[in-house]
Amino acid sequence: MELIIAANWKMHKTAAETAEFCAQLRLQEGRFSKVEVLLCPPFTALAAAAAALEGSTIKLGAQNISWEEKGAYTGEIAPRMLKEFGVSHVILGHSERRHIFGEDDTVIRKKLERALHEGLLPILCIGETEAQRSAKKTASVLERQLHAALEGLDPESVGKLVIAYEPVWAIGTGQAASPDDAAAAASLAHAVVEKILGDKVGSALRVQYGGSVNAGNIGGFVSLPPVNGALVGGASLEPDSFAELIVAAGEAAGH
Image (cartoon, rainbow, N blue to C red; front, top):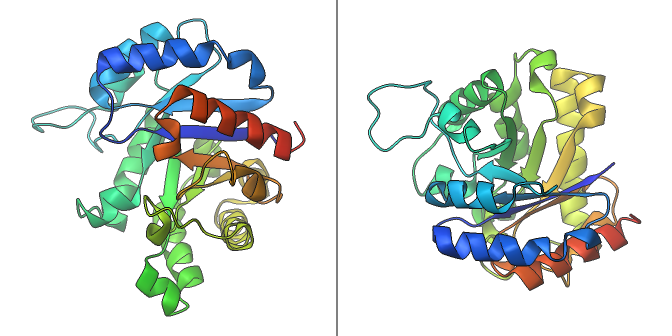
C-alpha cells in the first residue's frame, strides 16, 4: 500500500515562504518514489503553493473547512474555495481543533460530511490525551471518535479515507509514541473502520502516525504494516528535513 506523508504547517509560513519551500522541495521530488506527498499550508498560502506545485506530483491539502457550503459565516472557509486552488485533502479533527477551539465529535462529523459531499478526501485525526492514556482509555477514546465520525455514512461516499493517529501527548512535545503503540492504534482503527463501513473501505484505508515524528524515527513506524504514513508537524517546516523524512519512510516501507 502506498504511503501518504502529509505536512501540516499549522500557523507557519507566508505565501512567499511557501513558494520558496515548494521550489526547494521539488528539486528532490525524484527521490519520493511510491510515496504520496501532501502539503497543508495555511489558507493564505494556498494560492502560492498551487502555483509553485503546478506540474508536480506533490498534492495540496487544507487544515480545516467549514461545514457549510456558503453563507454569512465570518472567518470561515468553504470547501469550494479550497477546490479552486486544486486542494484534494483536508485535515479534520486535529487535537488542536478539538482541545483549543472546542470542536467536538458533532462538529467534526458535520465537517466530514461536508468534505465528502464536496469531493475532498478527509484526513480524520484521532488520539487520546495523557490523562486518558494513563487511565488506559486509549482504545475506548479512539473507538468513540471513529464511531462518531463514521457511523451511518454510505461506504460508497467515503472514498480513500485517511485516518491519522495523533496521541495528544506526543504533538509538539518531542515525545513520540513507540512504534508498537502506534501500530496497535492503527490496527484498532483498521478494525473499527472495517466494522463500520465494510471490508472494501477497510482494505483501502490508510492510517498515518503523527506526533513528534521526524526523519530519525519515521522508519520505526512505517516498517510496521498497520501504519501507512505520517502526518508531520515541525519536521515538515524545512524542505531538506522533510525530504529526508519522506525518503526514509519510503526506504523503511520497502518502496
